[in-house]
Length: 262
Ligand code: SAH
Image 1 (cartoon, helix red, strand yellow):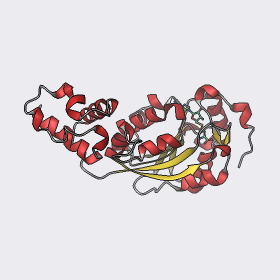
Image 2: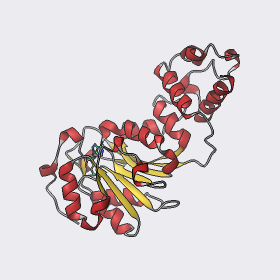
Image 3: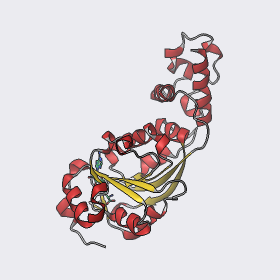
């Protein structure tokens, strides 16, 4: 276990909140199931608090670390020298797993909160390669991801993530275990990919869900005006409901109905 002065490394522009609690770090890493993969990609390893447990626990598994901060990259290469070729200096949002031929891996990370939704969208983009994700989010975002129909927090993130993954709120993490102390609580959640047939138009789903929730008070027949010209539009189910009333399954049914009429 290395002892570092977090202050020396801190850069606000990369939204860094370093976790200091070893037990929580261990608990996060232990949440990975290793059921159907043996490669793990860590987003934003920072000073390596999660990484060391990842390596301790599974020295034979493949790991890749993706970190945007060059100074942290040098630090990580110093403390984990034998993994230096797996330490990638990149913006995760611009990283494509196909570049290094990765086709089946889990994601783990204490994510930079300012881009956490974008990280999720990036994961959804490559969901065919990603069977599992364990991530720390701002608590409020974790609640939204794991929310269900009818709740106030139910929205775009809930529907899109839960279309592809079974989600679970694992535990809440208090502010004081980070340096610096953030203004908000955090929470760790798990995503496990569903086995269900995902035979539907992905971009149609994203488009419909975004439009429907951007006007969440309106009935779908009004918010989805974009499709009103398609044959038999009126017969599409759920049009008299609002976005927040539709379950994830019903959203899929809705877009399939739109799709067959187009
Ligand atoms: N995992 C560490 C650090 C968490 S802070 C810990 O728990 O202590 C978030 C980390 O994400 C920082 O190391 C930050 O530099 C990194 N980061 C921020 N934006 C990033 C991006 N776009 N791509 C990859 N890493 C990023």
